[in-house]
Length: 233
Image 1 (tube, rainbow, N blue to C red):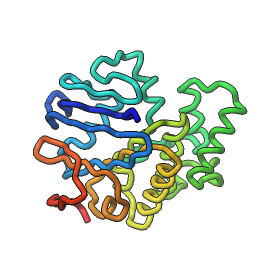
Image 2: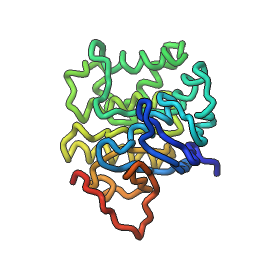
Image 3: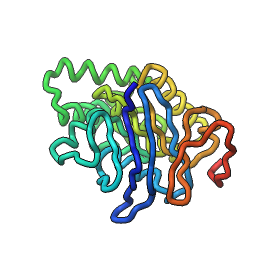
Image 4: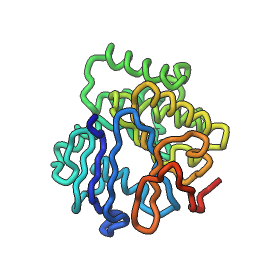
């Protein structure tokens, strides 16, 4: 099985500076992967490298068939259509309805037929349990509901991988638990999940592969190893 995301000997940049050295990482179809560590240890920089927002200048890396060290600007939109990204702060367009938010993304990525657009919006809202919220404005939704809409948006183009960057960071414990259950359900249906978090309780309750960012390196935690991270509980 070929990895969906792969880094070998990669230096990860945060701005102009290297924040992680010599990263080795292979993420396969069906994986649920956590990238954990304290604030400022380079977790989000890995996500930005996968989406080609940050350049890869040393080592090798690939995402969904694209060479991250050699990707051309005109290829980046095609890479990002294969990735679904979920942010901590939701990043919904506040001046339009849920349905219009989702339609905007589909139109921007080449969908033209109204019937197909409407059907896809209905499907992703059903997937996240939000079919009754299509005509709501984002400010009329709770934080958990907004994050479910953000996940629906990430699903629109049937991504091979969902990249979730602190998706529960602004949510209370019960709501965060619902978001994790949703991500686990999507994973069980075949979508690989890569989730950045600094909350130990999450990856202890919902086990998966764990990469630990610490001391300018990031490596996979083996099951028999114990965590020595001072993370949020």
